[in-house]
Length: 348
Length: 290
Ligand SMILES: Nc1ncnc2c1ncn2[C@@H]1O[C@H](COP(=O)(O)OP(=O)(O)O)[C@@H](O)[C@H]1O
Ligand SMILES: [Mg+2]
Image (tube, rainbow over all chains, first blue to last red; front, side, top):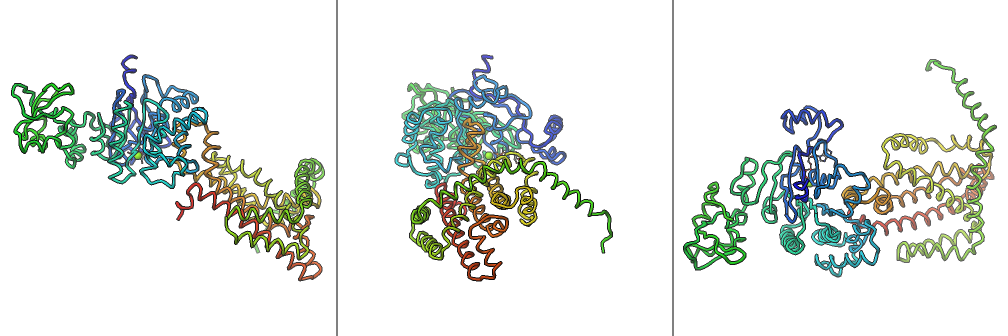
């Protein structure tokens, strides 16, 4: 049990099949038939297929996949907006599938908040009443919930729009309302289903930065869904890649970029800006004997050190306390970018 | 000629005898059950007749202004009401208004719950759809006869016939309005731990309100369309004047009373439509549609 409680979210062998008789389709699936085969033979759609993921507290865990790969189906399972055909789901060790309806409502009201791709704002309510909605459902008094809502409206930068109607705001502003609504719940887990996908690239990038900033302050557990591999690399501590409802690879962003184990993943990796994805500490030389004129922190990415190679052959890498942990050269970076599989030993 | 397969005479006897039986044994019960309806109609009628004429004008012109924030509709309403007064149609108009208001209120009280249940229960909707189709396509004279037989001529059968005729669009639009609520909004509401009741009252009904209001508007219009027929079985008011005009071949009487009905139709149609548009604009539906 203690093992179970270690994880904020644990999804274990969850399969979801849409259709009138999911059990028969499940048998076929278990015999190893593909999603397409099952659909052709039974007319049942495989939403997700035997997915297991473990999200540790404080992590930003990204599930990435193309449209139709089952991302939304997966994240909906965490708060049981969908019941699985088979499998188990635990949140902080609590069996979500074992909850009664009132328990489930209480769980949704107090333990988890969610941000939606299509925002899901209440169009007949003002911004502040939207942000306070979750607290209202929880039964918090008007005064108190509006005060909490105001704080998060200020945090996401919407001060002055409290009394506006959602449809008078831009897409980016509406999603800030969605984000503030989730944050105001003050839950330690937040689910985000393609929360930024509907936004313009520039605004999306800004929202990603803000999310990372907020996460550094609040240290929430975030399960983040996206179809954008660059976004996954930018914000994820860990990434699971879904294809046809099944996880094809799971790991740290740089491991996936350096070592794609699946042709489907390789396609994503081929298009990605690897200099941004790869942290220098994963490809550095752990030799610390020779001194370097210039050092970067071990959180730096390849793109951060590239300009330094104009003047230095070797650049040092230091940990958060300032101790040298290794060094890196242009050669190593270029090798990694050219995707020589794990050319060097990994860092700490 | 199509061959005689069955003897329809027997079938007709069955129906007729059945109805006679119902009238004989249950007639009083039905009448007693409909009595509160009559009370409602009479009180509304008395109240409206008790109000001074200028107060009703101020009230309706005020509503027209509130619904549009514009002088055009209030002016139309004002001229229309003056026409009713000047043409000596005031009292009949009030009686017709009372019938329409009573029928509409009753239709709302019945149709809203029915529409709500339809929107949540597929089997119930499957049963109700043909019933509504029947109510809308069956010529009103067909159910006028049994209704009159059961209740006797008078205001109650007129009211009931009007309600039967005017309810279906409101039921349909309530059902439609609730089912059209954006599933993304419903899901978000569910994710925050709402109960079905909280979703119904806090999300579905407020978002379906413009559609429901369109239904109320149609119900009012259909109730007005019934007033001439209703007056044949005992409802007074403008419809009765039209009927008299026909009976006595007084074209003028029929024409003016008919115009009076048109005036009422315009007033209530425009005011309720404008309120609907206001509501739509508030929740951003108007923009989405265009
Ligand atoms: N309610 C449903 N009924 C039937 N099929 C569904 C339903 N929801 C999702 N699906 C199917 O499940 C698969 C995964 O969908 P989804 O989870 O929405 O994918 P994603 O979010 O990655 O785009 C798709 O093939 C989709 O058509
Ligand atoms: Mg999706």
